[in-house]
Length: 65
Image 1 (cartoon, helix red, strand yellow):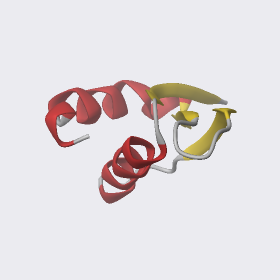
Image 2 (cartoon, helix red, strand yellow; image 1 turned 45 degrees about the vertical axis):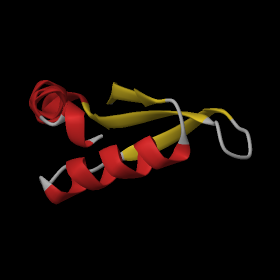
Image 3 (cartoon, helix red, strand yellow; image 1 turned 120 degrees about the vertical axis):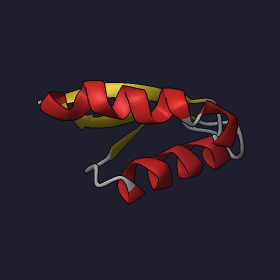
């Protein structure tokens, strides 16, 4: 089961958040919510059992995303 841990407002922030999580060993699934040329909204999901740790990684690195 997957859990949404971050909602990216554009492709650049999605790519940065996805890379951050992957570099920390998380398996990441991206779901496009609102497709658009530049301003598409995406949900980044991780396995449910890893969600709390993924939230921490994102929270501690918010200025880099």
